[in-house]
Each structure stands twice: as structure tokens, then as C-alpha cells.
Length: 109
Image 1 (spheres, rainbow, N blue to C red):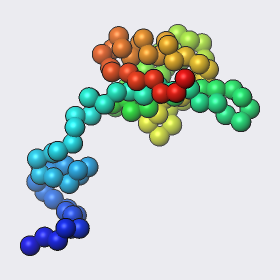
Image 2: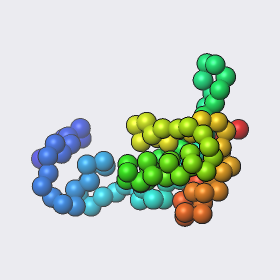
Image 3: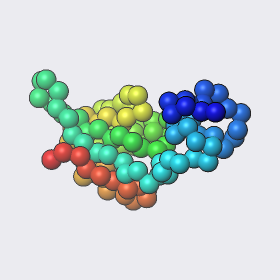
């Protein structure tokens, strides 16, 4: 008997999804979510290009960022799974990710 607020705490079922809490996963495929590209300014006025929701292994993100930094001649970092590039490089990053087959959505101006 389950109450409306009950949830599974632990399951050995391999088809159980911890994100949505259902045995056959009811989440939408993560690859269907678009990669978000935005530009953020800090207090000093300098800005950075931010790439979020990139579905890739952390080592792959580091390698991708390394390639971006080398081709653009700029700095950057991966922080909490988000790629950050110094400067406004939204067009370049968008073109590169589309060429790799990702759906891209620009956030902000």
C-alpha cells in the first residue's frame, strides 16, 4: 500500500530510473534536450560564453574545451559540468556543436 507522497529509497531493479522514480523510465531522452549557449558579464564588464546542458562525459568536455581554447586563442574552464570560455564566442561554439550533431539553443541576446 503506497501513500501519495511515498517514493522509492533504494531499488535493485536495473530498469529503475533514480531521476524520475519510475521502473520503466519516464524521462525524456537527454540527447533531445538542446545545448544552451549564453553570454554572461561579470562585475568588471568582461564577459564569458557559457555552454550548459552538454551531454558528454567530463573527459570529453575537457577535450572539447581544449580544442575551443586552442582555435580561439582564449582561456576557459569546465566548472560543475558547464563550459566557460572567456569572451563572446557564441557563433563559433554554436557552429562547432551543430557540426558535431548537437541541437543548440542560444539563450539571451
